[in-house]
Image 1: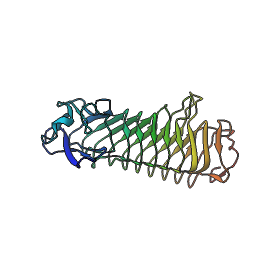
Image 2: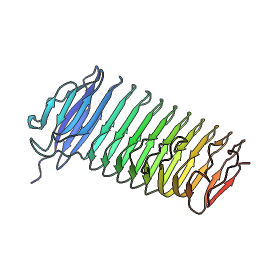
Image 3: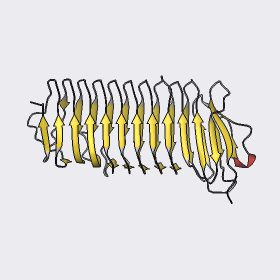
Image 4: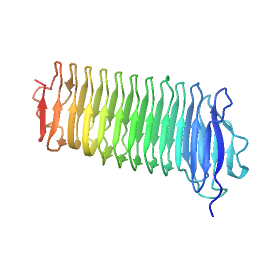
Amino acid sequence: MLRPRSQLQVEVLEDRSVPAVTVLVDNAADVSITGDNQSNDIFVTLSSQGIELHANGSTTLALNPSTPANWIVTNTSTLIILNPNGPNQPPTLDNLYISMLNGDDKVSIGACTINNNLVIRDSPGGNDIVIIDNTIVGNNTYIYLTSGNDKVFLTSSRFTQDVFINTAGGHDVVRFIPGTVIVGGNLGIYTGGGNDRVFVDPSSAVTLQVFGTTSIQTGLGDDFVRFGAPSSPGSTVNLQGGTVIDTGAGNDRIYMRNAFMSLLVALLGDGNDKVDNNWGTDNVTVGSGSLLDGGKGTDILPPGWTPPANLTVINIP
């Protein structure tokens, strides 16, 4: 028999008293976390006890007093553990929504299985950090960060459907750290204006695998897209769908090593752009019809540069 849908509220607080985290219970749980305009630092995980919310630094938590007592495992200002399925039952987490508002916020998610969607967002302002580690998302993942110098780190996680990361204005970083990240659908990374960085670090196994399309758009600014590193021979990307890298206007750089893309279209845009390494000798594999377009400006290839098979190069001397 299905339980009646109920509502639980928790809040992440510095100095306010507006309910901010909501858990809707049916056969699973929806968790909504909202911070305040201060700099909040939270960690969310799923343990055998329940859905755990940890507050770090000066951040404090508050639980709505209407929360059913049998759902509460722990309730303190720095740790709340909830099990909407009841005592001694395996906890479930369906949708996770996090809205951190203003401030320099940090959101860490680890060792979570989210059955449906993951959504993380902030309000304009703040230099925010998002870390996703050892997490499974059963549907779509959306990370929306607004103005500010934001950082998004992903490692050792599996996203069943689409992943969209939008960091808007500011000098932003999106980085895939060794420990394979698998995206079953499409991957979109949009960093907006600013001097942005999109890095895929090398590892013994491929660091980033995408089964759908991949779109990386870094917008206006002096941007750097890097798959791999000169100091390590490890594997970087296996991008099964079409890949578009558009660095927009600015003096941009691009580096690729030990990377596979079934189809690559790299558009370096206006500006004095630079290809940092020799793709022909650094094990870059691209499918038929792939293109590297330097756009307008004075663009540079390394001395002795050779293209991999299937890659056409235009607008670069």
